[in-house]
Amino acid sequence: MSILEPGSRQPVQIAADGIATAGGKNHSRSRLRLLIVAAAVLAQLVLIWLVVVNLRDHFTTLYVILEIIALVQVLYLVSKNESSAYTFAWTVIILLLPVFGEVLYVLWGRSGQSSRSGRHVRKIFQRRSHWLKPSPERLARLSQSFPLRRRIVTYVENQGFPVYENTTCTYYPLGELQFDDLKRDLAVADRFIFLEFFIVAVGQVWDEIHAILRQKAASGVEVRLLYDDAGSMATLPDRFRETLAAENIQAIAYSEVQKGLVHLYLNHRNHQKIVVIDGRVGYTGGTNLADEYANIYPRFGHWKDTAVRLEGDAVWSLTVIFLEMWQSQTHKTEDYNRYRSFSSVTGAGFFQPFADGPVNNPVNPAEQVYRQIIAGARDYVYITTPYLVIDEFMMDALCQAAQGGIDVRIATPRIWDKWYVHKVTRSNYHRLVAAGVNVFEYLPGFLHAKTILSDDELCVTGTINMDYRSFHLQFEDGILICGAPVLTDIKQDLLAIFAISEPITLSQLKHVRLPERLLQAFLRLFAPLL
Image (cartoon, rainbow, N blue to C red):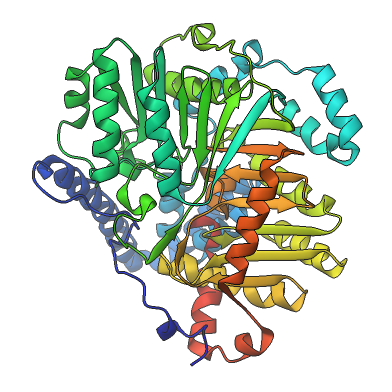
């Protein structure tokens, strides 16, 4: 059987949203919230459909009116200067589904740039320059050592994120290795602990970290936890925040879903994953606070994830990114300088933590950084991503690099967590492979790592997937690393991933059955919305 036929993979089946459901007692309110949200979505869809059906009696007159409304909606969408792929996908929906598509766009398609919350977040980001200041001296030293990287580093600096030296970096090829060091660092915190995750789930990982946080909070350490409400809605018990508050741990659910049931802003989620300890140590990567990320239970076979630990000057940017997101929810002014660290660390290389989010649209630093790395490669570009849902510009960049003799390799998972996204991922294989891109599917389990490495001297790792959701619809973070010793460890891990993955060939792609190709093509129309 061809590896690309639907029956060739055997993933663990989970809930449709791709989030494990927390078990045990005391989850009745969480389940109720899920039911309320699901019922609200269903009710809105049924209501829209009933309106469409009832309007058929006056079809001729209404047809012209609906087409005019649809045209106005499309013109409005085009005028917003969104991504061309995003604009095209919503245009298809609006024109193919009169009324239904237009209402769907009003409910779930708007970027939120002009909303009150969007304006509030932008105001916070605009004050970033008070805390993060570029250094011409550091940029000059980088330019002297890596002249071809000055452009990309300058670009990120112009987005508000300076480059640092005097930082050491540890790379973790597995989540369980990261959690071991994280617990040791948490145990010696004496000033503050900031944690920010998309998913926090009850289980062994959380229990062990929670025990440390509880002890530290009792000893006077300031502890804050920011988690995404949509990401963690099904994984946390009732009264989770109240329990933590009683332990002197501050906890906030980012953008509570029930407060926005009318619009259900499930797109603009906080996908960042940051830990800062005393302003001295920082972590980021693909892992969340849940057991599957430490391979405690085999949700999708072996869970392959990565993370990095920073110590030194670059941690300051992670601190600021966390405080910005925290302030966006509390609406209270923060004294950022209270959380500076002036400890001295010596380390080689340059480090540039940065963040991205939907309030930046249509300027998206994460996407532009990826494109610049691909376009500027001299020898190779290695990429790992759980999802490969890209627009024409990114596709062209990858294909042109491969056709220009660059060794372009991309690893995606064989075992999926979202079947529809996986089919869109595979729909991109043929053009990539035909252009000379080496595409691999990771065999042992689910590949959740998010890394791009080029020419032994430049890398980005963090929370950024190669999909429209990460590039345009979610808050993300990453670290641009240039010329640091840790790049050797990252390259070795990427080569190890390719070695245990299966290369995709054109002959395999030619044997994909017609119904599967048609389904992939259909889903690809809506790829930017997935």
